[in-house]
Image (cartoon, rainbow, N blue to C red; front, side, top):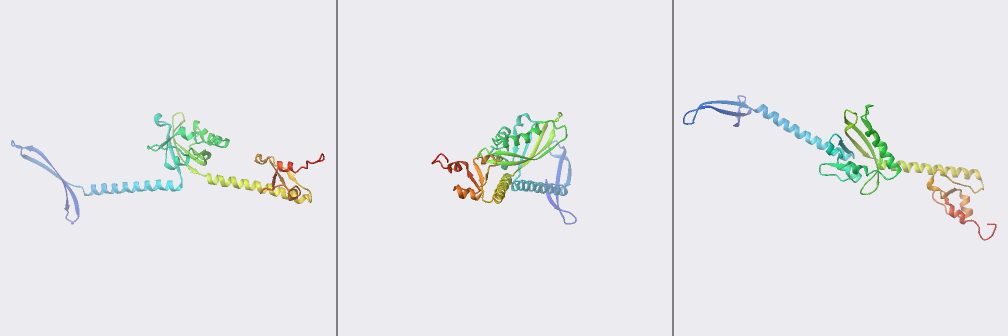
Length: 274
């Protein structure tokens, strides 16, 4: 039985009385009774303190999880040692959402579904191969982290291209140095990659325009054209100077190019000479 008491210093303490019947009379009434009184004040304070610390830890854990979501981290882990669950990738919601994967209520998606997210072109297949290849090899050289592997994925729902930077850590190895447990985080860098590609294309166009301008300056009254075989997407176009466009009446694109078919149509076909 527990009850609050005041000690000699008028401090509130919690006292627990425990009474034990050692022997009884013939009529069943107690004949010998032993009792002990315990001061549980300190113990209860410690228990309360532990409860408060646990509550704080839970709040910190939730705060960390929220921070991970806000920062855009895609978190995952795998346990290859468990045969039943070796095909599962335990991940947060953002990970599954970014790749268009089904996330089961236990918090995992299937590895075979993840493999389907590789973008169906050379860049996608090659980037996935480079990222996965070292994980299948025995880690005898002691490599435990594989950082900044950029893979071109395809969201299985929207079919849109997604560029993800994979950062993987091996948490445990088997006796044969094969991977036992691994985890990691992933960053969506799609916008960054898109900007870099646009910048590269812009630089290429600027170089082509500059080359065309230099040739035009040196040419005087000559009509100048040239073909850039380095860019297969422009095989149907020629670069030309302004004199060429004005003399032949060719339609000029924003990149100072004209269609080969338009040039062919400018040939005079009303006589043998043309």
